Amino acid sequence: MDGSARILPDRLNSGFSSLIKSWETLLLAVAIAVFIVNTFTSPYFLDPWNLSDATFNFTEKAMIAFAMALLIISGEIDLSVAAIIAIASTAMGYAVQLGAETPTLVLVGVGVGLACGAFNGLLVTRLGLPSIVVTIGTMSLFRGLAFIILGDKAYTGYPADFAFFGQGYVWWVLSFELVLFVIVALIFAIILHRTSFGRTIYAIGNNPTAALFSGVRVQRVKFVLFLLTGLMSGIAAICLTSRLGSTRPSIAMGWELEIVTMVVLGGISILGGSGRIPGVVIAALILGMVTFGFGLLNVPGIVMSIFIGLLLIGVIALPRVLSQLVKAKAQ
Image 1 (cartoon, rainbow, N blue to C red):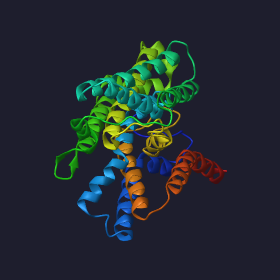
Image 2 (image 1 turned 180 degrees about the vertical axis):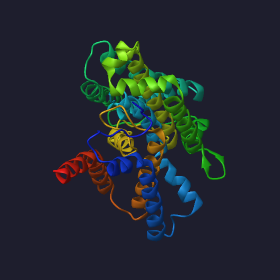
Image 3 (image 1 turned 90 degrees about the vertical axis):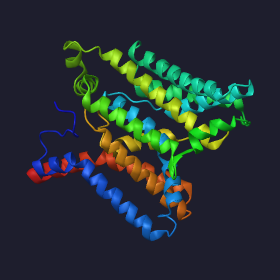
C-alpha cells in the first residue's frame, strides 16, 4: 500500500477519496485564509518582526511533531514529549549551577532527551507494553522528577551565548529556530518519503505482522522512532530554555496536546499507516498563525486551549462522520 498520501477505506466514494487525498491542498487554503483574516483583524500582523515572533509559536513544537508523525505512522504514540522537555531543561539548569558552559548544556539536553526516548522505547518494544499507557506513565514520571528537583524554584543564570538558540537571528528577521525548523522538516521529509526506512515505517503502520514476516525488524524500527522523538524533545528543550532564559518544572506544560493536534491536523492517520511531512509543516503554520492572531487580539490563553481541543476532536471525527454520511447516502 502506498503510504505517501492519506489512505482511505475502499468503501468511500471517489469524491470523498479525492478530497482527503488533497488534504494538504485544503490545509494550504486554510493557512491562506487564516493569514488573510489575521491581516484584517490586526494592523500589527504584517510587521516583519511580528511575523518573525509568530514563528516561535510553532517551531519548537513542530520539530517534535515531525518525529511524532513518524511514530504515529508506525502505529505508536508518545505523550511524554512535553515532560521530556521539562526534565531535559531541569538537567540543563542543574548543570548550569555546577558551572557548565553552552557546549555541555547542549550535550546534556540532547542526552537526556535520548535517554528518555530510549526508556520509552525499551518499555514498548522489549516488554510489549502499549505505548499510550507507557508514555502517560512516563509523562507523570518525568514531570514529577522536575517538580521534585525544582519545587517552586527556578534555574537561571544561563551563559550569554546559550541565548542564541532561542533568541538569535541568522539574518534579519530569520531566527535560528526558524532556520532549524526548515532544516529538520527537510530531513524528516527525506527520511519518510525518500528512503527505505520511511517505506518500512509505512509498512509497519499498515500491517506490522506482514512487515515482520517480510523480514522487517519491527521492534528495532519502533525503538529508533522513540529515540528520534526523545532526541527532538531534547533539541526543543534547548531552544525553549534558551528562549525563556530560565527553567521551571511547569515548562512546556500541555504541549503534548498541541503537538498531537499538529500531527493529526497535518493528515497523519491516528490509526497509523499514512500521512506526509508537508501536511505537518502546513498544520504547524496554521496553528502558529492562529495562536499569534489570538495573542494580538488579547484572547485569553484558555480560549486557545479550548480551540485546540475542539480542533483535535474535529479532525479525528471528520473522516468517520463523512464515512457514515457516505454509507447513509448509498443506502
